[in-house]
Each structure stands twice: as C-alpha cells, then as structure tokens.
Image (cartoon, rainbow, N blue to C red; front, side, top):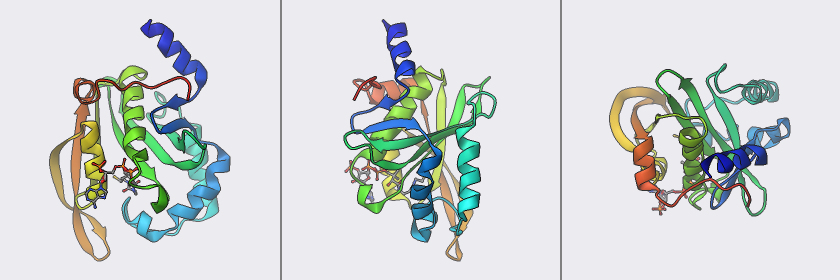
Length: 202
Ligand SMILES: CC(C)(COP(=O)(O)OP(=O)(O)OC[C@H]1O[C@@H](n2cnc3c(N)ncnc32)[C@H](O)[C@@H]1OP(=O)(O)O)[C@@H](O)C(=O)NCCC(=O)NCCS
C-alpha cells in the first residue's frame, strides 16, 4: 500500500497539501522572483538586502532547477495555491548530507498579501513529509532571524524545536542580530502531524 502511494506521488510530479501544491520551479517563475526579491523589506528577512539583476536571478533559477538532490545536495521547489495555481514562493532543502540523512530547510512566501494565511505552514508540512517519506531523511534543521516571530511560530506549529542561538551573526540595518537554530526529527514530525500526508491529487 505504502509503495503504491509513493509511486503515485512520484508519477503525479506535484505534491499536494491542504492549501498548497508544491511543484518544480520553472524559468517562467523569474518575473515573480524579480518582483519580490528586489523588495528590500522582504530581503532583510532572508539576509543582507541587495538589489538583484534579472541576469543574476536567471542564473540562480537555472542552477536550482538543474540540481539533483544527491549530486548537488539540494532541491528547490515552487509553492503554489492549490485552488488557483498562483505562484506563492519557494521552499527548499539544501546541504543534504546523505550519510547522516539530514538537510537544511528554507521557505519564502513572497507577497505580504499571501502571508499569515496558512500557506507557509502547509508548505512546510509538505516538504517535511517529502523529506522524511520520499528522500528518506531523518532530521531537518533551519535558522531564522531571532526576531522573525511569524517564521518561528510557523515552524513551531509544524513541530520544529528551538535548539540554540547563534549570537550577533547577522548585520542588518546597521545592527547585529542573532540567528535562532531550530530542528525536527522524523518521529517528532509524525507525532506533531499525525493526520498529515501528501496527496497525489488536489
Ligand atoms: C515565514 C513565512 C514562511 C510563514 O508563512 P505564512 O504563510 O506567512 O505563515 P502561516 O500563515 O502558515 O503561519 C503564521 C503564524 O504566525 C503567526 N504570526 C503572524 N505574525 C506574527 C507575529 N508578528 N508574531 C507572532 N506570530 C505571528 C500567525 O498568526 C500564524 O500562527 P497561527 O496559525 O497560530 O495564527 C512567510 O511569512 C514568509 O515567507 N515571510 C517572508 C520571508 C521569511 O520570513 N522567510 C522565512 C525566513 S527563515
């Protein structure tokens, strides 16, 4: 039964959660990326806000969409609204370490109009389910600015735990901020989300 489900997930080429559909990133997503990644308010949540050229972001997308999870140790996917197909942002696993079965997680819901509507929580659940049930990973970690309360709340809802603070590591707007490190093990994800599984159809 389980093998049958995995085969169907792989064949459908998209992962469906309750609110989101996670699909491959396409070169045509570039306009959405340009729009939001050059919003410096958005940029300062992810690192030093810097204006990016179309060329730079096209190269970034090209690299990410050509990546193989095992060879390149990363997978980047697009988050879309399950009901409308609207592009919402990106979710990724990177630094995939095969002998240790662990990876680093990252996510962005681009438009402020789409934030705090449950998309980030759902997409996080989907990619963690994929990490544990398709990629066979055991633990996932992340870091986030210590004052990014919405992100921290989102990750805690899914079952991530706070495990430490890297102090004064990010220089943003003329001041240093810490990076909060969080992680989750497969068994903790299953305990926190007992009824959740990725679906094959909307
Ligand atoms: C962080 C992010 C992925 C979360 O996704 P989202 O779709 O906005 O989040 P959700 O709606 O699923 O959940 C947000 C939760 O945080 C809560 N929240 C929102 N603002 C908050 C704040 N200032 N303080 C505390 N909690 C807050 C919401 O109420 C909700 O919790 P609830 O369901 O218990 O009510 C998204 O907002 C985002 O991409 N932001 C910009 C980039 C970013 O910060 N990326 C993460 C970098 S580590």
